[in-house]
Length: 404
Ligand code: AMP
Ligand code: MG
Image (cartoon, rainbow, N blue to C red; front, side):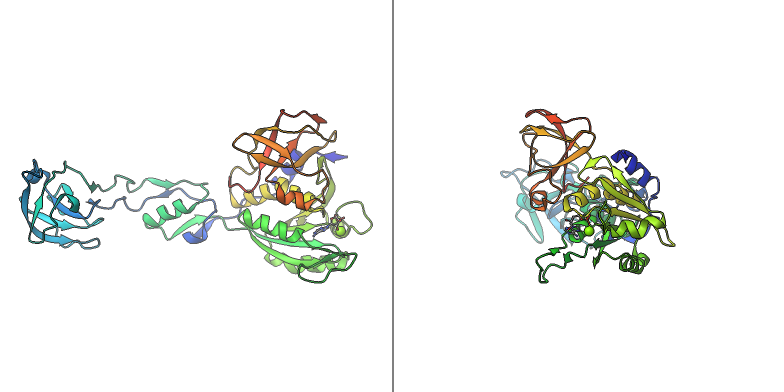
């Protein structure tokens, strides 16, 4: 008995609520979903100001200035950015003004240096600006009270710049989930340590911790846990205090040492088969007093990655209030014929060429092929009832490592 990837995902998501939002310093919010409609506290620009270094004038005082017949005006003052000293410009005069400095009242245009002799006491102007030329008007970009960032927007650097520009130091955002990653397997060794003839390096905890971090979470990679239910439960319970979500790798299938299943099935965690390849054996439930969601992923590296993509990523996005929760797919023409098992949705690794909207399978179906997984840039999604695909047919593709 297996369940479909959708019904497993729905079951997971029905048990996960977005985390509570709170005000956070804006620099901590890159990649987070904004949890409020942010209204501008000030207009942008906040006051009429100069767009050029030059001279503030009344346009009518310099009308008709041309190189053969320039106009010269007395210079009555100088206004730098951040200096509001000269508040009014008398008629028939000019004031030196720098980019961003407030336009004195009475002035309605700026003559850039390039149209003048750069005079100090008097200035000779040989080109006339139109009314408003080189002036940036108050509120022309953003008006006070405008919604500048709406709730749910995933904040990118441009939003942070705007939030700061309208005077916000903090903004309501959902926190980054703290994700604890535990690798199980008595055969596993830490990279950098010596390897026995029967041992392998623990790749999964790095893969999963990095994937969680890429999704916006704070990832805590716990070391390797041997295939002992007692050791596993001790390690898990030690970690629960700092976890909003737990991911385990390995120990969920039908072997004799399936430690995660053995330790957690009695605690009510669900273990079963999902009709997909790779990633058939899965576990999900809640553990500890705080009922922390736990994802028990299969140990083969490609299986654990495909499981993360299908189940953990949408859960993390739900916690963070990010929409859409599922990575959007694209359609591409497959370059080679392919077969796929009946009754299981296959997530084959691929090389997607966005320019030509084509995709080629990478490597074979084996779920141990981490070299091919790293070479690939996408997953091809082959439906359960499709067993053969001809070259040139359209297929669904999940392009990896892209923001959405
Ligand atoms: P398991 O799900 O524990 O039966 O593991 C399935 C396969 O994945 C076995 O060949 C394991 O050695 C391998 N494996 C399990 N955990 C890891 C890991 N953390 N890194 C790399 N390979 C792993
Ligand atoms: Mg194992």
